Image (cartoon, rainbow, N blue to C red; front, top):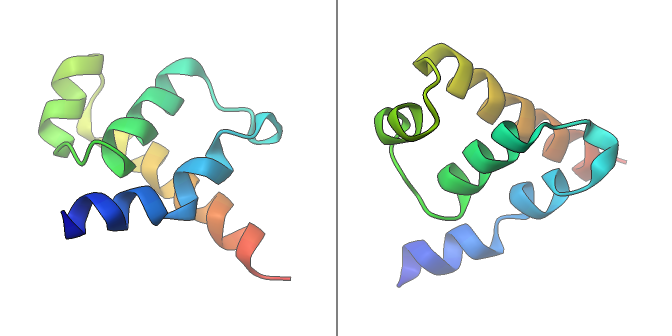
Length: 72
């Protein structure tokens, strides 16, 4: 339950839903699977048919977007 609460309270996913970041549908799905559903990178890559490098880049892009919003 703690993991679920931590994932749902993480602002990264909600910030990435904003259209100004220019994320594609696949990128949003990867971000949702990682931050909300808590799936492993291996499973995300298999489900979305992308390479592990691409998944890591997408997740890092989401984290950078959240960091840029958090800093005034």
